[in-house]
Image (tube, rainbow, N blue to C red):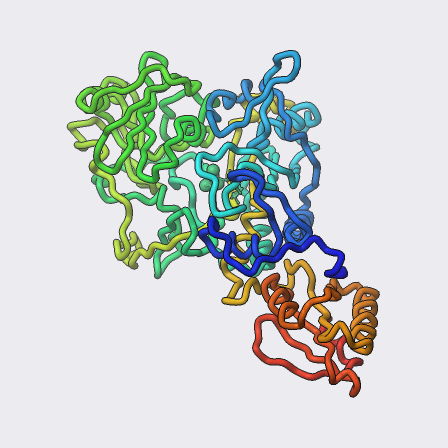
Length: 559
Ligand code: ATP
Ligand code: MG
Ligand code: MG
Ligand code: MG
C-alpha cells in the first residue's frame, strides 16, 4: 500500500480524553475514530489488525473442527422470551420495534439464536457433536463505555457454541476450546492467564476467563504462587468463614431451573457496576427472590424480583432484610449450571429445603444448614481476598489486574431445555443437547496487545497481527534514485506476498520514521545515500540497531 493514498490520520499529540495507552495509541496511529461515547469506526490501519486477529481465531477454531456461520444481529424478541432473557437482560440490551410494533433486539450475545438453529436442524445423536461459531458485531448498552475499544457499545465478538450428546462430550468440546484459546492468545503474543470465573461450585458448571495481565484491567484476579489456583476476585471472596462440615456434591437449586441465571439477574439489576455488590436470591411462595446488596458490609439497597427477573418490590429497610433474610451463603449450581455467589434464604425456606452453604470452592459446601444453628451473620461475613492471604495449598495468594479477552463456559442444558433443543439417542430416547459457549472480543484483544507491546514512540506490533510487516522509506523525495529504488523494492516485496507499505508521502524523513514507529510496523527498510553502493538500511521496530544490508539480502530478512 502506498501511504500517499491511504486514509491514515496519525496524531502527534496525545488525545485529551484517552486515559490508557492502548486507547491513545489506537487514536494516534489512525486505527479508529470515535463517533459517539462507546461507538467507534475502524480505519484502514485498524481494520487490518482486527482482521489478523480474526483470522488467527478462525485458523485455531477450524483446527478444532469448528464451523463458521453468520447470524443476524437483529433478533426477534420471541427467542429471548423462550429462554427467559427478554426481561432478564435488562438495560444492557438494545431493543427496537419494526413498523408493525414487533419487538427485536440487537444481539448482545447469541445463545438463543444458535440454539434455535440447532433445534430445527438436529434430531439425532448421529449429527452431534457440533461446534459453530461466528465473528460478528455485538451490541451492548454498557453503563460505562470506556478505554476506547476495550469497552464499547458495539464490538466484534467471536462467539462459538458447542452441542454435544452428554457431559463427557461437553468436557471434550470445552477442553478443545481451552486449547484453541491458549493457542490464539499465544499467537497474539499476549501474556495471559486463564482464571476460574465460576464459583467452582457443584453441578459441573465451569467457566474460565482468559485474562491479560495489565494495570488497566477492570477485573481483579487472584492466584496462588505455588499451585494452579487462579480465579476472578468476584468469585474469590474468603472461603474460610463457614465451618467445614459434611462435604456436599449436589444441591437442590432454590429457584426455577431454566428461567433465569444469576448472571442474567446481575445484568438486569445492574449490580456489576459496583464490584462489591452482591446478588442474593431465594425462593418463597413460588417466587425467586433476589436481594441485591450494595457495599461491602452495609446493606443499603434491596430489590426483590420474581422468577423472571421483574422487580416486584423495592427499598426494603435494612432491619427488614436482617429479619427476613436470615439465610445462608450458598455457592450453588443447579442442573442447568446456574451459579450464585451468595444466596440468602428465607429462614422458613432454608429449614424446609436441603440448603447448602459454603464458600466459592468445589467441595466446600455444607448440607442442610440452618441460620443460627450453623452460622451467623450476613454480608459482613464476606470480604475480598487480600494479597498474602493463605491459599488452601499453603501458598500465598497474589492479586493482579487483568483484562478479560476471552471467556469459555459450560452451559449444560439451560438453553436446550428451555427452548426444546433435543436429540434422539441410540436407545431412541429424547434428550436435551448439552451446550457450551465461548467468546473472544476482537477489538479488546487488539487493545490488550497494544497494552503489552508499546514504548515511548508508539506501538510495536507482534508480526502475527501487524497491519503490515515492512515499511519502505525513501529518505529524500527529491532524489530520483531514492524513489526509484524504493518503488522497485516495494513492488518486489508485494510480488513476494510480503505485506508492505511504501512511504511515498512528500514528508521529511523524520516524520516518516516517527509515523512508522507510532503505527508499529515491525520492519523498516530505508533507502538513502547508500543505495549508490546497492545498500539499504534495515531496522526492526523493537530494536535500536540499524544495519546496512545489500539489496539482494532484503528477501531473506523480511521472510
Ligand atoms: P466484561 O466483564 O468486560 O463486561 P463480559 O463478561 O460481559 O465482559 P462476555 O459476555 O464474556 O463479556 O463476552 C465475551 C468477550 O467479549 C469478552 O471476554 C470480551 O473480550 C468481549 N467484550 C465483552 N463486552 C465488551 C465490550 N463492551 N466492548 C468490547 N469487548 C467486549
Ligand atoms: Mg459485560
Ligand atoms: Mg466478565
Ligand atoms: Mg465474560
